[in-house]
Amino acid sequence: MMHRTLRLGSTLALMVLLAGRASAQDGSFTRDGVQLHYRTAGSGTPVVLLSGGPGFDVDYMMPVAEFVPPSYQRVFYEQRGTGRSRLATVTEQNMTLRHVVEDLEALRMHLKQQRLFLIGHSWGGMLAMAYAAAHPDRVDRMILIGPGGPTLEFTSWFNDNIRTRLRPEDLEAQRKWDEAPQRGVDPDKAALEGMKAISPGYFFERDKGLAFASQLPDGAFKVQVNRLIFADMSKGYDLRPGLRKLDRPVLIVQGHQDPIGDKTAGDIHASITSSVLRYINQCGHFPWIEQPEQFRRILSEFFAAAR
Image (cartoon, rainbow, N blue to C red):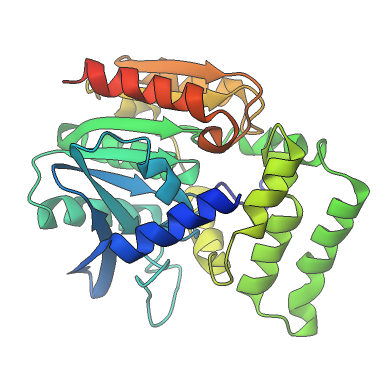
C-alpha cells in the first residue's frame, strides 16, 4: 500500500494471514545497530516480500505468498521501523532511502544469497527498484505489483485519483482522522484510520476496499517512517539511470484502475529493458484481491519462464 502523509501532491484473507503468522519461522540480523526481523515459510530459493507505505507492516502481503510456487521459501521482511524492526528513536538521520536499501543488502548477505528475488507492492516496489538501481548485480528477479514510480512524478496525480472515487462520508472521516492528533489521538492510530477511510479509492470495487480496510489491525502503520522516507526522497529521487543497467527478469503487474496510474508502470517498463508489463482491467492497487485468477496466471507464467 502506498501512503503519503506529506501529500506530495474477507474473512478468507484474514484466515490466511493468521495461519501464516502461526506457521512462519522467525529470523533476525543486525545492521547499523538496528535489529531487523523477518519470518520465513517453506523451503527453497528465498523470495523476499516487501510491503508498501512506507511504514506498513508486511502482514497484509501474506496472501500474496499463496501465489508463489511451493518450491520457493517466502521471506516476510519487516522493514526498518515496521513490525518488530523498531528503533529507539526514528529520526531523519536513521530513516532514509539509503538506509532501507542497505538493510536489504545486509539481508541478502545474512541469507547467504548471491542475488535476491524481490516481490514488492506499491512502495515495496519502489524499494525493490532502488535496491536494483544501487546493486544491479545483486538482483535475481523482481515482481513489482502496483509499484510507485522511478521518480516522484506519480505523486502529482495519485491523491487526486483516490479522491475522485470517494464519497463525501469518506472524505469527512479522513478529515476527522487527519485532525485527531491535535486532540491527543496517537498519530499512528490516526494515520491508519485515515487510510481505512479512503481505502475504497484504491480499489475498483468499493466493497473490497472496505473489507480490506476492516482487516488492518491496530499498529499496522508507522506514520513517522512514512514521513521521513518521503522527505528524504523529495530531496532527489530518480532511479531511471540505475535501472537502465539492470538486465535481470522483471515483471510489472499494474491494475488499470490503480490510482498510481498506467503511466507510472509504463515509465518503469521503459527504464528496465528486461521487464515485462502486464495490465489487469477492473483492478485497482491490490490485484491479488480484486482479480486473483488473472494475477495467479500472470505470476505463474513469469515463474515458469524463469526456470
